[in-house]
Image (cartoon, rainbow, N blue to C red; front, side, top):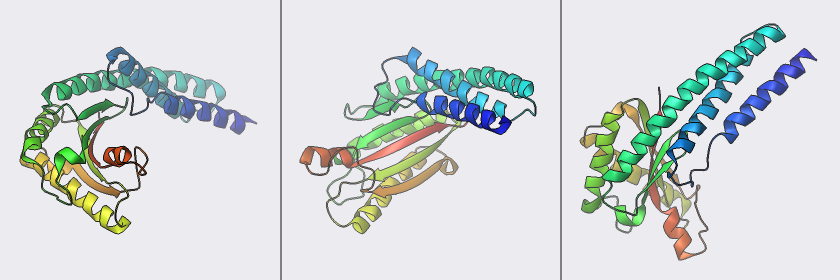
Amino acid sequence: MRILKVTTLAATASLLAVTACTSVDTPTNDPNARQGEGIALGAATGALFGLLGGKTKKERRNSALAGAVIGGTIGGVVGSNLDKQAAELQASMGDGRIQIINAGDRLIVRMPQDILFAVDSTTVAPALRSDLAAVAANLQRYPNSTVEVVGHTDSTGSSAYNLNLSQRRADAVAAILIANGTSPSRIRTIGRGEDAPLATNLTAAGRAQNRRVEIIIRPTG
C-alpha cells in the first residue's frame, strides 16, 4: 500500500510537469504566462524528485515540498530568461516569416525552407545569412544552452532522399551558426525528413509548412 501511495504521488507530479508545458504553437505574447509555466514546471519536477528522497511518509512529504520550492525558483528564472531571449531574437530577425516560439522549456526558431534554400539545394540563401548571424550572436549572449538544428521536408519524393536532404540542410544552417561564433560543442544537427509534419502533405500549403529548419534552444542552467 505504501508503494502505491508513492507511485500515485509521483504520477501526479509527472502529470503536472507535462501539463505545465504549453504547445509550441502558442505565440510568445505573454511573458508573465511563460514565466509562470517555468515556475509550474520547475515546481512539479522538483516535487517529483523530492518524493524519491525520503524513506517515511513524512520525509517524502517534506522532501517534495522542499523540491517544489527549489524547482519553482529555478523554473521561474529559466522562464524569465527564455522570455527575454525570445524577445531579443524576435527583434533581431529581418524576415518576418521566421517564427520565434517559446515552448516554456525551450525556444524554437522556425525557418521555412522556402526562404532558406532553393529547390533541392543545400546552399543557404544570402538574404537569410544575416538572420542566422543574429541567431548566433544571441546564442553567444545566452551561453547556457544546447542547440539542435533540425531539418524537415514534406513527403514529396522518396523518404530516403528526404532524410538525407534534411540532414544536409541542418548541417548547412549549423555551419553558419558556427562560422558566426557559436561553439560547435553546443550544436547537434538532426535530419528528420518527412516524419514530423506540422500540417497535411495533401495540400501545397501544408507541404510548405512542413518544409522547414528549426533551431531548438534548450537551457542547461
